[in-house]
Image 1 (cartoon, rainbow, N blue to C red):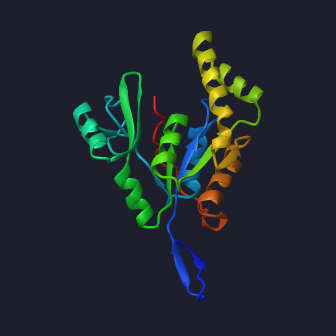
Image 2 (tube, rainbow, N blue to C red):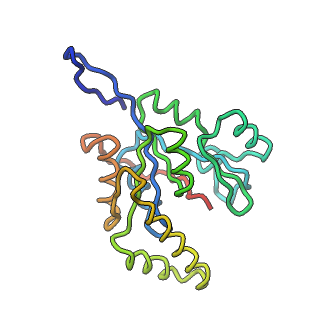
Image 3 (cartoon, rainbow, N blue to C red):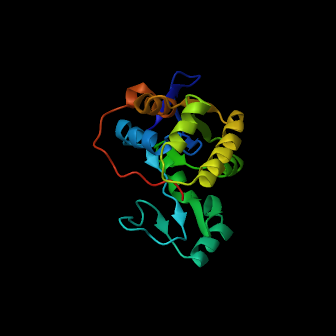
Amino acid sequence: MIAERPGPDDSTTVVRPRLTVVSGPSGVGKSSVLAEVRRMAPDLYFSVSATTRSPRPGEVDGTHYHFVDRDWFQRMIDSGEILEHAEYAGNHYGTPRAPVLAALDSGRPAVLEIELQGARLVREAMPEARLVMLMPPSWEVLVDRLTGRGTEDAAVVERRLQVAREELAAAEEFDHHVVNADVRQAAADLVNLMVGPAARTTAAPTTAAPSRD
């Protein structure tokens, strides 16, 4: 999609779309909100990360991740083909640069879901990127969401809460804050930032790329 604005000679000037980086603490609902964004604006390009971990059951190469070996991943880093990268649980994850640039060059706004460290690296590599922090309605709501899962022990939950505190403390580094009190409204706010309300539509559910873990 190409946005246009009047130029000084009353002609139109093509405005290159921007990469939108969406970040937020665990439990804030990033996956749910971005799944709704996909339904509202199916023409957006959602970046697919590369990883050195093995595929899990049901994961499809090129849809959920680009699965590569460590040597290949390192070559991508050395050649500047990775926009940002990090290591989690002994596996490497990164954002391929070329598909993002190709989408933007074709007029498609691009979306990247990533953690705080990655968002900072994207800001360094691509200063024009739009950084959006997805926020909980309140700290108490976030705590309830994390502790209400009941699937993790107290130490794991406390670690997640500590990381969440650090991430929310960095909110002022982001260009926009979107509060997720309601999934559909938060998704609509994100779409409005990226393409405006006129571009929203209704589409069938699509397969969402997973968060890095």
